[in-house]
Image (tube, rainbow, N blue to C red; front, side, top):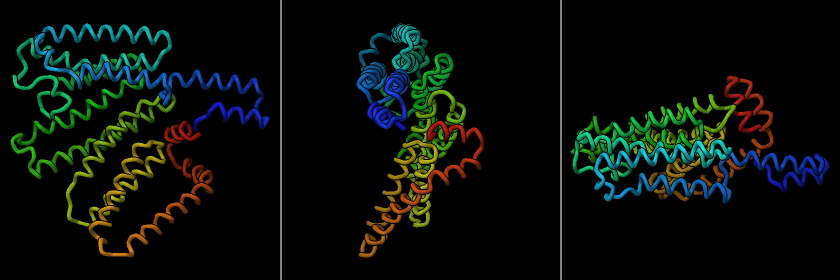
Length: 349
């Protein structure tokens, strides 16, 4: 629930709170919002600047850096990391949580570059045709040492600073590892084979399930603090849904099961108040309905009518839910474990 200045003014106008209480309450919410990501110009500038700096050392790294050699790359990476940690500490002491978290995240994102330089320096890099700039665009087993090092660094810095944004590089790294590990198992000359593609899709799907379960565990554990589970949920759902949607099947029963899973994702997203489940579940549901319209019932004039009736039925179900939401929610929460009750109380009030 978002509380705006206009909402507080209405409460004052209806004599629910006094004018001074309204001012104090608004100032309190303003101070609290500084530590929570929001769609404001200040936060947009924070994240835009941070992502530009992170992108400069990751996605937009060019071949010019190769001329510094392994030792030069390692030295520059450590120098940048020192500056990033210095800024993170300084901003944290000033209670500027979001920019401090972005600076700490910048340090984590430097880790694969530093490890790449270290391997180049010691002559341990196994492929002279592969360079760092391909790290974020190619799937290769070569990146595993860099990814494992980044994961360890991310966990250490996240434990030290406890900024929610630090979970982002950890989640991305876990996602990268799931893709690159496959390259150790499959025949790399046969990467586009249909069986190989199906295997990669299954790995992505099962990895997504594991990451989503990890996100749920983190969500429960951090229910009294900040939202540390957001990025894990995001990449977990992307990996799971992407792998699920990439499965090939000629069975209409399997496709209907896919539809049911997507509907369950919508319901789970509503329960956990996680939009990522709802968005991808809705996309999958639309894909299935599109399949029915273009393949199964392409010559049936009754299908659009039936679909319209189903849509209106869903709207009516929403009306019934709104009328009985409080009663149903209270009864349902009593059945849930206490940690989950506390999590939902925090999210829903």
